[in-house]
Amino acid sequence: MKRLVSAFVLCAFPLLTYAQNNPVTAAARDALQRRQKNLVGAAQEMPADKYGFKPTPAQMSFAHLVGHIAQSNNFLCSKISGSAAPARQVSDTDPKEKLVDALKVSFEFCSTALSQMSDAKLADEVTLIGGHKATKAAAVISLTSDWADHYSAAAMYLRLNGLLPPTAKAKE
Image 1 (cartoon, one colour):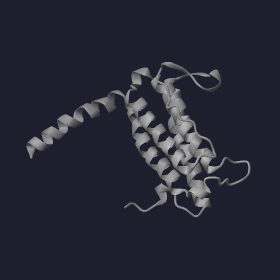
Image 2 (image 1 turned 135 degrees about the horizontal axis):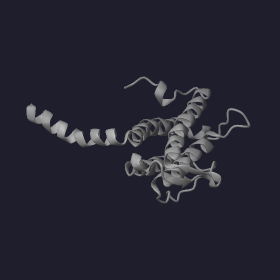
Image 3 (image 1 turned 120 degrees about the horizontal axis):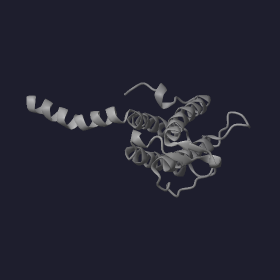
Image 4 (image 1 turned 180 degrees about the horizontal axis):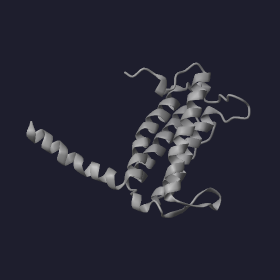
């Protein structure tokens, strides 16, 4: 038993050290795990025939929301990592399967981008939309804020269609 505990401590130590030395990027990676599960779950929950649903004429369709999340992930994570985003383009008229797949791929891309990030790089400058200069820290904060904002929208769209969002379902 002592060997098992010792082995666990030795294996966990590098992870704990990384989180202590890189608390911001470690927190972003933790958030990614939860948000990916919830956002992909919401996209999967919505029936394909409801992807054109708009709560009001002025709001985006559910399909547009899913595509927007994928594109936002790709854009911000390319800025964070300095690597090219996946070359997938989606539109509101794409079928549910293509949009969900693009969303999954965007989260995989962000997972890779954040795994290569350290807090030491947070002050590095990046160019965001409209040529706006910001730090990588701002891009990480925008990314995690977007996940919360987009999930609340997806949850509302689901509830307006009589469906429960992933976080409202009983734990199995």
